[in-house]
Amino acid sequence: MISIGVLFLAAVAGVLALMAWRHGERAFERGMQRAAEQAAHLIPRMVCALIAASFIAKLMPSELIARYLGTDAGLSAILVGTAAGLILPAGPVIAFAVAATFARADASVPALVAFITSWALFAAHRVFMYEIPLLGPSFSRLRLTSVAILPLLAGLIAFAAGWFVTLAQPGHL
Amino acid sequence: MTTTTEVGAEDAAGGTPERPPFRDPAWWGMLARTGFGAGFWGFFAFAIAAGVACYAVIGHAAFIGALWADVGLLVRMAPRIAAALMVAGLLWVMLPRDRVTALIGAESGMRGLVIAAFAGMVTPGGPSSAFALLAVLAGSGADRGALIAYISSWAILGLQRVLVWDVPFMGAEFSVLRIVVCLPLPIIAGLIARRLPLTVRFADAGRETGR
Image (tube, rainbow over all chains, first blue to last red; front, side, top):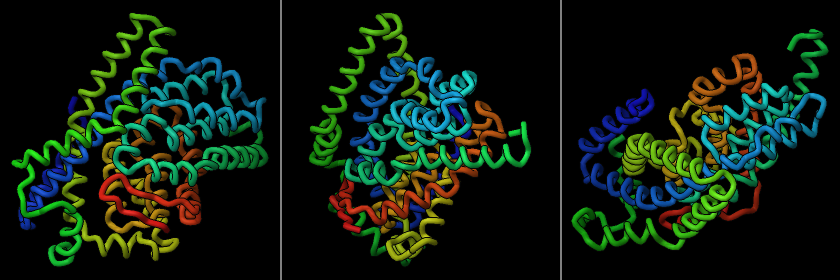
């Protein structure tokens, strides 16, 4: 499938290849060598991680989780949203389909914000498919520790924002 | 662009730049060992375990369906990954390292984090290009705080993802609220990363950064 994104990437690659060609010093060949070495490291691991992630996503009980994300659950809904995002190893297609399922089940806005933030930051398939092969496990450790509180923070800010909005204009969010 | 790159590009290549690697059987052997080394078998075992669990729970037909969906996904991803790795490889050779260090290096302070977070927001494409670019920045003198701010910003605020996924699925109102709420988060993550006492050893070339 050829999408706009791929065409754009290919165009950038073409321009860079031309620049490398004119740059001399075998820049093009060295760039391709680096690309091949990264591909060798990345692709076998990525294929395994992708297959594992799709199986795990199939096992996720999203209907069950949706029940704990309601507005009446308040702050604990933010925790459940964070946890749900944490364990969802899937790309945006599935993640946003799940988020829409949650929204239809009347999940609160802070819980949805926490869920999407948590999924975006922790998506396990991305860690295993790209981050560990390309940057190494110690970088993943640093990143996951650094962003650990972010989903909760996002949920809490959304909670506070919703509270202020409700105060300012009752009945309208 | 031409004069400043020469010094940085030389040590970036790492190996032996005089020998054309594509005709060297030792290089191909090294590639095979890189791809199917000890780390790979951990991933392989994980996939098998997930497959067995899934087979037991969802049954034969759904299991085969999931596998075929994976094959389709991989075929669609292949051109994207090839292009992303090519871009990253060429940038790796040509990116002026001293300028990257000045912009988002260890001494760049708050300004470096803001620049990195903004760059993450506007980086188009999926994880294949974002993480490949992150690896280039990691090897080009970017500081750890900037790296964390960049990739966090791409993950939560990436504009392409917002336009393609957030708005259609969740509605514009929710998406705007989510972006405003999350705007400061990548910078906070970068500040935390600068203070954490963790040592980072990058996957290739064994570069270490204590900061």
